[in-house]
Length: 243
Length: 243
Image (cartoon, rainbow over all chains, first blue to last red; front, side, top):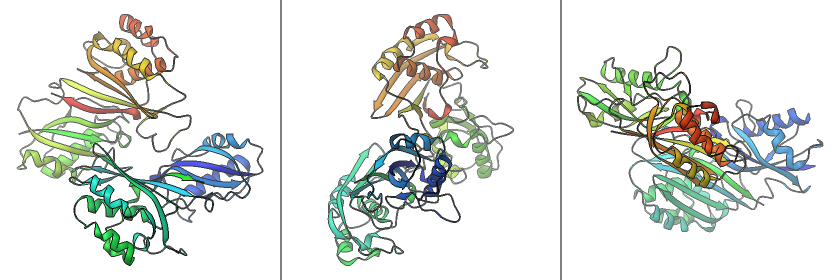
């Protein structure tokens, strides 16, 4: 039986999604919990890897099991075995050919920022600080340039090994609430560091430190250096995966 | 020269405000930073103690210094020496007779809750989970009973050594936004664990597990056992102190 699991985790606690020799990964932690529960050494397949420090409130994964546990109760049993840094939010029986990675249709990431001249201990864990003021309307307008199907080569870190750098962004929303800013990006898939690079570029544009045209030129030329630095992992959260 | 300092800290990182032999306190950490900066061993006086695990985004403290640093720049210099768990948000020259503790006129605390049947790793650090649904309008109505000058003896943990258990609550606001609930309590001062006991009682009332009348009876009789458990420290945050 194939189980579809929705997970939330605090990326601070892990070396990332993927199992590694040194470091506690989300994947390894969930696999260990499944083993403790069922006695089965399963492979837990995620919708995609998240880097060290990246959070999730809606990561989706699947695994196969012969355990005699009702699928919709699996997550509660797992939660008694999972550490506080990662918990399962729901579980259900999935079709035999469901694949958390390959069947994913849309993913939504959120990048969280806060405006402050001082580092704020209560915000630092889940957001990145921006000095001074920022024009979020300008950011929203600039973001529209990226919506649609484009070659996002310039918006990816080297080191990825993908067949194509063409992706479709369905929408980007820049929302400001007091000193908190969220950049929500929804697409059919993302290249390595893509949301963190997009967010970094939008921040520079919002601060008037980068011409909006750089986005267009980056899409055309694929030149990473037209854009700003990759923002830190801690501000990023995988919020939802749709199938 | 007397300096008034506004501080924010993540209570998770400390054994509370007050210096202790074993454990890292906020007070001790700030005093160490002042020492590193000025070479002076000062006493940093807070508006009040916060318990282990309680957060602050507007704790106020004072100390005296002969250092030749502009008062309004003191906080920036301190921040270079403070660890990431506590930062100074501002500093200013205070009157000679200003006392962060005794001059305080109003304090505002916020208690954060979230409604969820599952523990959520991204909320657990700064909020307390409530199972099932809750009637926040009922909570708001019940809270009005506590507004005004009352003997809050029933709303305090034993162990405090205060002259009087009479306090004035200026207002209580219960706000719900999606699955997040905030209870904001403003008063002229609070007894030991008072906000955590008030919040615990309001939660029980909102869940229909305690009659509203218990609040009135607790005020009249001073009986702690009429109320619910003290909620965990991690949901509490000292948001502001006014002078």
